[in-house]
Image (cartoon, rainbow, N blue to C red):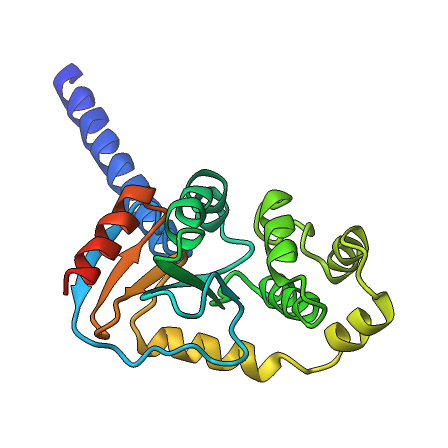
Length: 229
């Protein structure tokens, strides 16, 4: 009798572990992609990715290397990369004239992500896109906890001393809806599945795709390899 009871306990334990594993896998697969865990670097042939007049650009337009970031202002991995790696990229690649940096919104965390992108573009109308970009990432909260509500985004604009009449006019209309949609569609065509995803494009059109919040050295290596052709 004792052996039968022990056998039942073992079977129950195995069954419980299996159920927990299945439920856990379902939660993982249904959640947004964790680009931090799936970081990768891939060399690509030439891709059809050019700078639109609507894209914010940091650095010299004559720089031979272009770094495109598909990002989401609510994305924790994007915020982590901004806080730990972006300054090195800007200092060593952008400020030296080796590369220019292009930000393209890829908003998959929800409506607040879209609102944040639209607010940044509205700030860009007054020459303050990158200041707004930095302010958002520096004050980033958890996705969809309200930190990027439209009310709070207007407060960020006030902190930058923007002309609020113009900001509200640009921000509260549908001025950037088509841009946000086309950026998301572009990312989909290029195989972007999460943020941040970078494309480092060389002077001959060849590119390196970098997925996740990878260290500065990965970008330096990609840029140097593309410059060598």
